[in-house]
Amino acid sequence: MSKSKSPLVVKTVTLIGTMLVLLIPLMVIRGLIVERADYRGEVEEAISRSTSGPQKLVGPLIAIPVTEMYTTLENNHEVSQKRTFIHFWLPESLVVEGNQNVEPRKVGIYEGQVWKTDVNIKAEFDTSRLESLNHANITLGKPFMVMAVGDTRGIGVVNAPGLDGTPLHVEPGTGIAEEPQGLHVKLPDFPFTPKKFNLDFSLVLSGTGNFSVVPLGRNSELVLNSNWPHPNFIGDFLPVKREVSPTGFQARWQSSWFANNLGEQFADADKFASPDLPSFNVAVATPADHYQLTDRATKYALLLIALTFTAFFFFEMLTGRRMHPIQYLLVGLSLVMFYFLLLALSEHIGFTTAWVAASLVGALMNGVYLQAVLKSWRSSLLFTLALLVLDGVMWALLRSEESSLLLGTGVLLMALCGVMFLTRNLDWYALGSPKAAGPRESDELRIWK
Image (cartoon, rainbow, N blue to C red):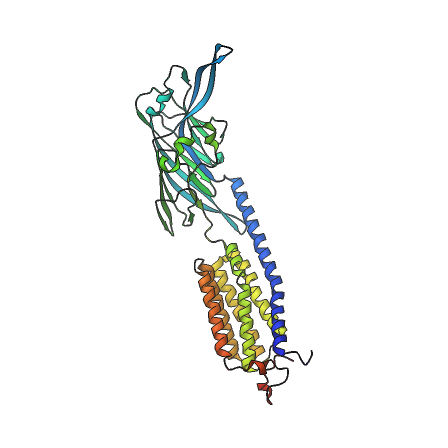
């Protein structure tokens, strides 16, 4: 090394290079997290393929085949024509009540959730909405009730009592080409009186992931009780009321045609199969995605390493004890191993317990090593406690998404204030000189030989 080079500059450049080297294993860890998360996703898809997927209820509504006769003028002659279409008759009110039971399913160390919901549906129809079909040139076919679902494999027991109490015969499929997944029930021919009648039936529906209901009624309501304490309320409508506890959740949704305009959307038969229909929706969410949390933790790894190296660096300057770059590198690798251990343990014992275990293992390993390097149990214990405090701060940053920027800024500000306070009396020109600053070796503040 040239005599003209400042030891302080050389040391700083070397430590920055050491941190850049540590980015390589950190990138390996992040790649491993993505790989393990993808495999977990494949397991969840395998569970869905083996049972049934997300479920979206569209119905009940009444489909009426319509044949309309009309005349057109061709070559000055009237020609009779006819067209056939399906008229969708939507309910005035729709009330869906569900009791959901969620069961975890494991494949190796990975876990997914399968739910089963007892669904009770009440729909009230007003025959005055059929007055537009009461014409001599219109012939009505046999009406049938339609209920579409996301995955027919999840349909269990169906109980459909008739208008007179006699059970109705339930057929597979919706009876509509645009949406084959579901069921339908043939209904007796309706006179245009009485003005109102009700449908009341129930079914058992199983699935994975989302459970959603399209609010077809002029006024619609969904009430859902579940034993799963980690719901994810997503979709077009948030619940008007919800209660989440460690034993499960209760939620209630409400909507009307004023909010969703479904009365107009179902004027066209093609809309029945539209995936864009608004819905009440809740997802059975994974309680804690340890892969996502571990990935977020690795984003703070460089900050943790930089703060640790800074503490060692100023410890050297203030005490005169010297640490070799290899010793910095070994301490940095131990911090990187924290994330490897965190990922491995979190798959078996959960993220919180894994974080505590990895922190204690890392603190013990560094404490014993630093005692040999620094030749002082007091200094070793001080650095070990500082590492545990940093792990606690990182934990707070992970758990506080809304104020993570504020907490992170506070940590950096406190670190800067500490450095400024401890170095307020240092002569940086003397420290950067390649020659010794005084006659005693302990006062030379040499970085390393």
